Image (cartoon, rainbow, N blue to C red; front, side, top):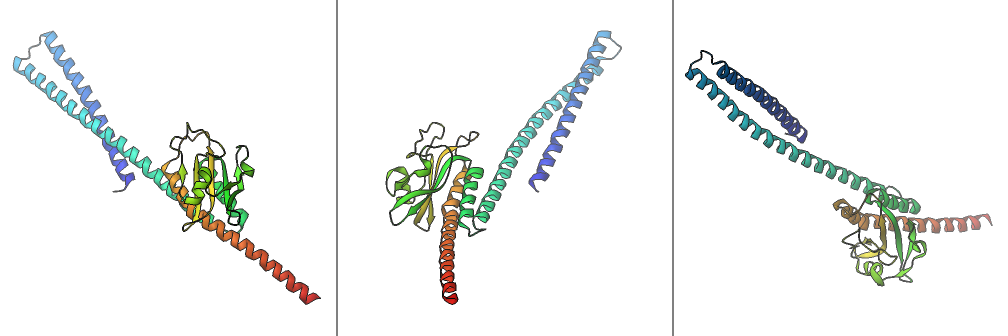
Length: 265
């Protein structure tokens, strides 16, 4: 049975139980009133008949109690199912977001477009307000920004050597860094909220450094860590491939220009 069918079934039981309970309460009240009326009027009913009426009232009261207990059980089952349904729906949305993010990262070889896609993922899916994407210059062993967003002072010109401070440690070790309590963290240019290495196998080519989350977000969630893992591998591959493609395009254009020059001279 599907989740939706279970929900309909529980709702049906819930409504039936509620209606039956309300009917029992009305019948109970009617019989109590009738007994009281008969006793007040001192009608010609025998003691045996009055006892029978009292017994019926007692049976209805017991049945009413059982139905109230069942009503509460069904209500709890419905609450549990609603919570589970919301959890499954959130998981499905998260999986869809991960799929879309992965597809977008590999949809182009244009370097600027790849960087823009990474920025959109960090903003829209992770919810970062201030962040930078750093690439490692292997000749100087320094990390420099190729894209940034937000109002963190010095973010556009930050330059960190691999191994220096928190950011440099992530670049050297290849291990991600996150603060435990986002709300109370004291953030500086050298002490961000999170640092995610962009790795091809064990080789770090760059970092995503997050300094501030959007106002409506006060912590990293489970899906954020999944996105960080995706970015660590897929974004690194996409950026590296796009960079190689751009370099090969420039070299090809240079060679073609040189050949054109030779053939026209």
